[in-house]
Length: 107
Image (cartoon, rainbow, N blue to C red; front, side):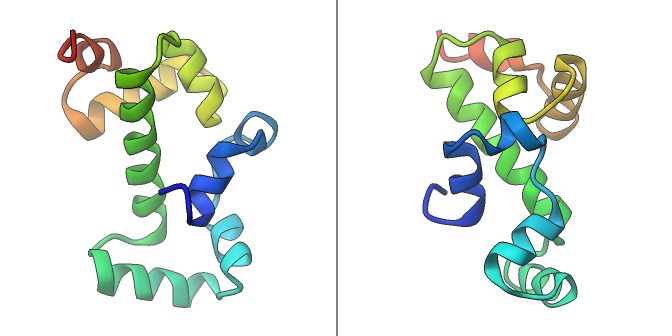
């Protein structure tokens, strides 16, 4: 993931400064129209751009939950969420477990 725009977004301080990555950010970075990007992602992955971004955020969260000692709140902020509760809600909706339950599954 680190070689594409979302990986680079999370490597730097973009998420801390700018919040969650947007469809516009990805399309501008790739120099593609938002519509074309969404069509391509849909054809390749079955996900539209927003769904793809959410998937990437969840994968990055899983990585941080399983490989760091950062708190759930710290991970939420690093990923660009303004409120840890929003992160926890999205994570649970997408994975059917809370961030803490996910982390505990690795211990």
